[in-house]
Length: 357
Image (cartoon, rainbow, N blue to C red; front, side, top):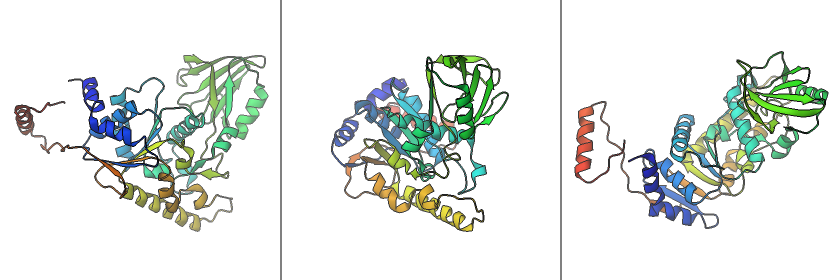
């Protein structure tokens, strides 16, 4: 049996169909009970296949979220028109801006940029420590985003000044997000919303071509018609208005959450740390308060409940939820004893189970 056949079994499941039917109701809460291991990803993929739309998956922690993301990516194959994204934390301690991880900032900015464009069928996988950090508002992100398109006119001097205003560093050659270079009629830009830099070639003030290139060998990878230049939203917009990521996502987003109470506890802890750090600050530099930079615990439940919810995992919170019961059992531990593994597989095979590895 290959993965496509296994997907078909889950997609054809009456229980997956039941979840999809429940999702047609307003303000619904659903509990998918009894799911084990990768079955969570298979069921999520089945629901999305039958009921396309925007989905947010909140796992317990970064490791679990990454595992779920990779599993969903390999299972779904990502249909055309569907965008699967991982939304990490920026990994800074509250108000310790120098500890930001640029790779994570790029990922967070990419997610915000895609959502801002109101694309359909977006799947976002995340965890509490990531969503506790509020994000720049849609209005401010749009205001601080420059769209560069082939065939349109831009002044190189204007782009130079704007990138400096965005806190981009001007270099001879660029290697990291937040850098740019100007050489005659060529402008290289490494935006925080893109994994690789772009090379813009001008003919006068007109954009003649835009190419993605490898910063290590400077060779072109592909040509594109347009791209967005987005600053580091964690630094450039640190003093600007923020909003919760849960308010930022589209209103029709369905939320899958694994262990709501654990997520709530982590939101509480993150907010407490932010307040503690803010109270200890000695810098005279103006900062936003914890209430502006971080998701308040009192807002978490309210904002979650503005969406249709699917709980999964081992612990469930909402008392009025509709229940869908999956009859699954975890694989017993073998402790690297392959004889026990073979014995278990043979036993299940004799009992008319289908073993899938």
